[in-house]
Amino acid sequence: MTAEPAHANPLAEDLDHILAHTRSLWEPLRGRRIFVTGGTGFFGRWLLESFAYVNRSLALSAHMVVLSRDPEKFALKAPHLMKDRAIQFVRGDVRSFTVADARAQNCEAPFDFVIHAATEASAQLNADEPLRMFDTIISGTRNALEFAVATGAKRFLLTSSGAVYGPQPSEMTHIPEDFAGGPDCTQAGSAYGEGKRAAELLCAFFRKQHGIEPLIARCFAFVGPFLPLDTHFAIGNFIRDALAGGPIRIGGDGTPLRSYLHTADLAIWLWTILFRGTPMRPYNVGSAKDLTIGQLATTVRDAMGGTVEIVTAKTPDPKGAITRYVPDNTRATSELHLKEWVDLPDAIRKTARFASLS
Image 1 (spheres, rainbow, N blue to C red):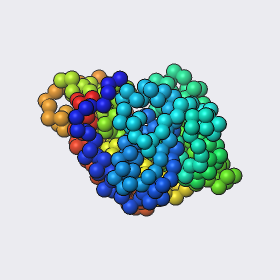
Image 2 (image 1 turned 135 degrees about the vertical axis):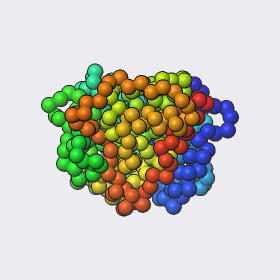
Image 3 (image 1 turned 60 degrees about the horizontal axis):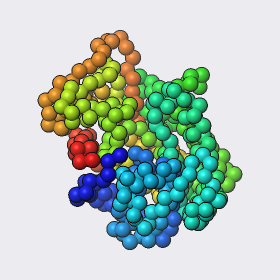
Image 4 (image 1 turned 90 degrees about the vertical axis):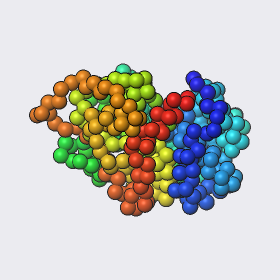
């Protein structure tokens, strides 16, 4: 793993952006404690970076505890977070970590908030080991909820997924939270989506039986620093290809429609949902500005100022159904007054710049 760049913080502009749009949110966290699972992942890293920055900027005197399977490995990537006295890392598996495990590592309850962001959004794991994927989501969520109850936490944020809706109907341009579809439960490949659906149901059980307040963020697609550039995320792969001098390779026919929210905006949305969202009222988290994968490749190339070739593996079938993965985010924008502040070309440039420095 590559250590953090030694020069000026490449996230400074984004962290200022997050603070500017969340400044009024943080009073409930002043002097309080928050527990985070999945804090070393893509989403979690943004939560940690923004918490550390806001905590210092507003002198909140808040404390965050982060569950990690391998704190030493994360220390190589983010030594500044490991050294932050307001952040404590504890070792453990989200499926089995208990209050006793926390105490054994000098981590005492109570907690005021829990964020459960620990799930591998791995297409390969979902395809090769669907049972492990499903079990991690279900066991991890139940254990995180039980930990929240045992430590006195009231507000519990679950990072769910747009995968809970199953395939988006081709005639539906933007999928709303009240869409009653779902993944095909007869297919092993539905492990991730069905797992997230069951995780939301577990939240409903714990609200009814324990009075906890679960907040549900159904997350779609994102771009920004810390995005892996070598997995199944098309936008990450396109940025990688462009940085390497091209060509940008489209694995399919380029016709599926997607949308992308910048990760600094993602952090703003997640913190807002945690502090101001309505319990058990899911919020779609993602951009409503859709484009095809082919258009995305062109946008990446143009945003990065290049003239690299774009290669499409398959010829589009004019009779083929349109596939979409695009949220209707009206609930978040109207009820919580959230916005898409960072446009896609700028988000791409930020991601490429960070990758070049890492």
